[in-house]
Image (cartoon, rainbow, N blue to C red; front, side, top):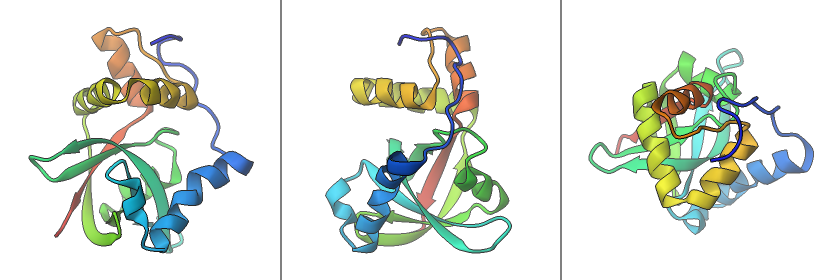
Length: 162
């Protein structure tokens, strides 16, 4: 990867980029989430202050089939609203394909997050490079730089209750 270790987190998306990133939510609401395959999911979470239900489309960074866990990262860091909402309430729902499941969120340790992101990079090297650039993070391949990067983009495991 190129770039500095750590990097500067970018601001939250706005305008056309925000619309583009939220567009999958309408696909899931139309029960057409299967069009995304297993690469994306829709997270339903409760607002920590408002109590309202929010929906956030997220890319799946890793799937742990041994634990039936779908791993996502908070690309805009630990201050993302959905991530902060999960810190307040880990009982969520996820849309996988066209089906909705109650689920439980689990915050990955930095070491687990490194392993998940390394698997994502191996599986999708071009997408990983673009994602890291968009998130304003990078690593130089050393264990220390991987850990530093994952502190900036924490990961969450979501386990459906089927």
